Amino acid sequence: PIKNQTYSNVPAILYFLEKGAQPTGTVYDILRKAEFFKEFRVSFDKKESKKKNRE
Image (cartoon, rainbow, N blue to C red):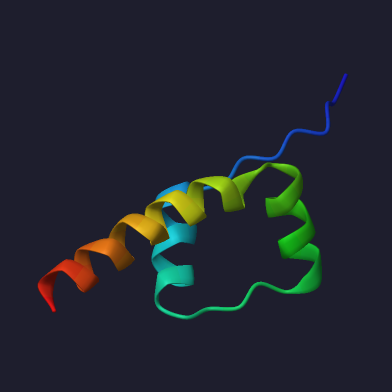
């Protein structure tokens, strides 16, 4: 039986989102269901704090 499994290349997704890419509505919904944005937020917050420390 085929299961509704979704595989995501997290490093690639992070790379493009950090460069300013905007996911479509469907992609956003898939990433939200996979709780991807919790990871992205943690990674984004770490980079932002490093930038603030440099200034």
